[in-house]
Length: 99
Image (tube, rainbow, N blue to C red; front, side, top):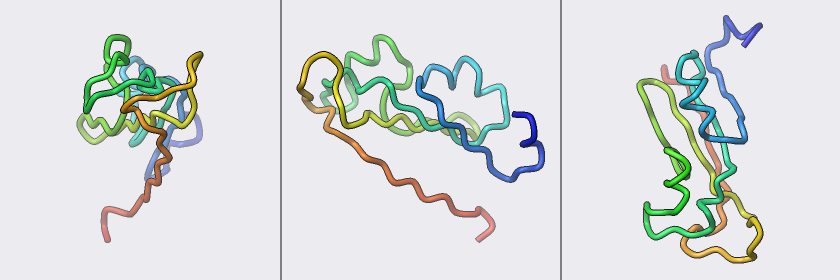
């Protein structure tokens, strides 16, 4: 965080979404982007086994003025399949709030 005191928007890239709740919510980071969960390669709507290990496992989460986006990725771990947790590439557009 050193050297970011005078920036208007703080974006953090972190591999593990659980980092957000453990360390980021107590900072002035505006948006954190993460991956890691792959939604356990299985999801039915907003239900996934990933929820057993992660409070935030896929999609956008907000708390106050801070946000976390967890991308479920395009790959797999161990087993070459995905059900309901389809591969995802995310485009995020940042715009000034005073426009």
